[in-house]
Image (cartoon, rainbow, N blue to C red; front, side):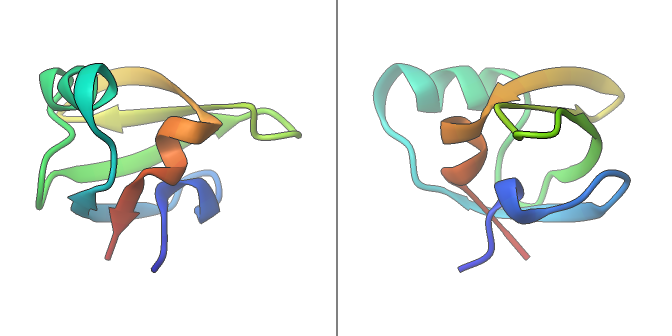
Length: 73
């Protein structure tokens, strides 16, 4: 299983599935992070505590645990 957390800066991919539940899942879905959504990693700090992504032209900052819950193709 490949997750969003494993991608490097400027890599593009599509969402396969979300492995989160509850409030976190609702938050991700509200940002447009759903199955087949195109995502591009825009930036991340050295320790990857935070990852900045682009979804449908919107920039979103995710915590590492959130990024690990997003399975990508």
